[in-house]
Image (cartoon, rainbow, N blue to C red; front, side, top):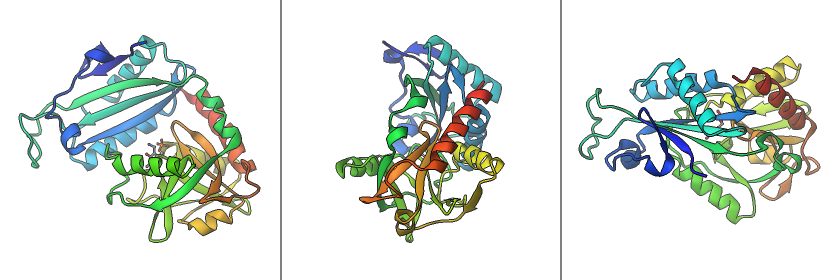
Length: 286
Ligand code: PMP
């Protein structure tokens, strides 16, 4: 079935949607993106994603091409036109398509390119992976220094995912100066003696919208949270590990570089946080 996608004001069948070869998103990765999960036909944490989008654009000297309400309307229209129940909405905004390729930014009034499309993932919240947990490998973090900006420079994360698959694992945790930064497309956590440990916010990692929600719920449930970097060795010796992202929610990690974490099955804290996160997100979805 062909999707209806959004491109620069138009809703079109995906085959008819086109952007210029001079688009700076295509030529320079000069673009930001967001992914918002849809559960039961509703958007989860839309405001969080919209706020991060505004921040990412601002950090790159780009403007928000529409109001937050207009953006919400487009998201809802795509859910409706595609009968989307569970899955996500991908959004990308580029600095637009000037007449030629040039390192200098085009004039500020160059129209930005705005693209949104849906991804259907029926039963997303009941993923079998969550019951088994996932395996990760560690790799060097070779990305640029502003990972807090959600740009479409996803080549290295994509290569990291391929390295993980080639090693028989599911994902990779990236390591810089001996400490884990984050997963290829998720934030990374360990649990030791009941304490949830995750790297503090900085330019080194993406400020996950799911991370913010999960840490809030953890604190509300009287769990202890410590925001600091940890090593792979510490993770291998931890009681539990997990990742968070808008599309994986809270996903237990049961192995790092071949070493089982805890008893090698999803931990109690990760499983409880997943339950709380899904319950609360579904309740608050719009
Ligand atoms: N870190 C990276 C590098 C990511 O790509 C993502 C997902 N986009 C995350 C963390 C998780 O962010 P969120 O919870 O907002 O999906």
